[in-house]
Image 1 (cartoon, helix red, strand yellow):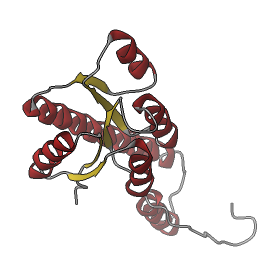
Image 2 (cartoon, one colour):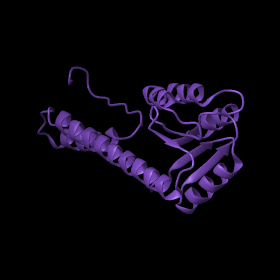
Image 3 (tube, helix red, strand yellow):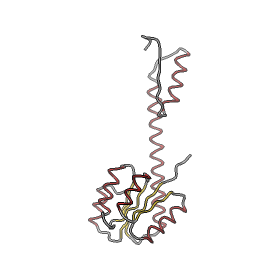
Image 4 (cartoon, one colour):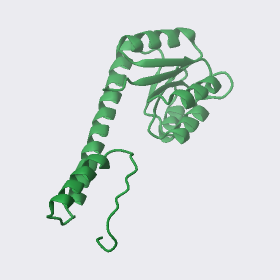
Length: 178
């Protein structure tokens, strides 16, 4: 079962929140919104979104401070900065602080949708690559065992099945058998 992409939009402009939420929900994403950094960070902690759209100028805490908090909380979450007050210095600072991208308003919804699709495609590819690396590592490690008895071969098959899970396993045997 494929997990739906989770997105959080933190922007003080209601029209931006509404238009982004509507367009992204229509594409099948799970979308939450917040009008300020404080409530946005609370939602971030509760929902653990994969992608955050974050305005730079927000009531209360600014977007760059919120960006740092998001990156400290979850280094896997991507943050796309959106701002009507874009300048080179803030763009460089945001990218150095870990922003995935930096967009200036007004932007085209098609541009946003393509960017989101690319992000989730790259994320999916990275996850598949990690699974493949784990499987290859597990396969190579299991080949280090030397066994020929049917009982040990059966145990090795069980170990391979359980290795990819978080299950706790207890293996018992006679004293001195290894």
